[in-house]
Amino acid sequence: MKYSGSLFPLLLAGILAAVTFWLQQVAEPGGVDRSGRLRHDPDYIVEKFSVRRFNADGKLQHTLTAPLMSHYPDDDSTVLTSPQIVFHGTPPSRLSGNTAHVSKDAKEVVLDGNVNMVRAGVDAPDTVVSTARLNIFPDDEIARSESAVTITKGLTVINGTGLAMDNKTSTTQLFGPVRGIIYRNNDSSRKAP
Image (tube, rainbow, N blue to C red; front, side):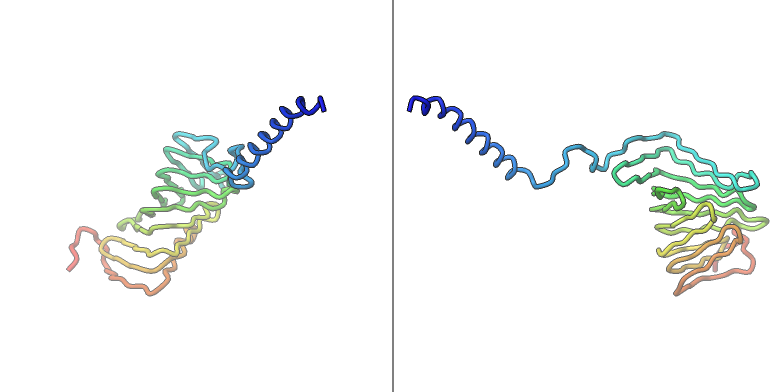
């Protein structure tokens, strides 16, 4: 019986430890990862970001620039702020948007918000394509959009519900319904009726 007095503090400490463990389990949802690896925080940020891609012949194919690039390790995503892509073909094409999301393998760039593509006109007005979102495959110089699209060239204005573009062949396929006004003489100095 003389051991019962010395076991009481150990028993009390064990009960307190069990209650503390139980309170911690009740207070936190199960499986919470406290390491921070699941947080969507950038692991690195680059200012004045610029990447150039050359074709098999060694000619500059396209340039991707942005004032700010952020990489996120949780999903291995890359986000660009105010990106610009220039395809250096003849004629050159310039694309821009509010943000861009670059795929893990850098094969696809998705421009989001106020997306504009300007293809320089040869002895004609520039062709301007405007949409909300554009998926670009830079190595193939192909772009697709499932958002509403407006194409202007001088006074000509064409609207569609989406498009597929091939910059190498300078072809554009609009998805319908397609509506537009096409002027033979695309002189932008003329006023629309």
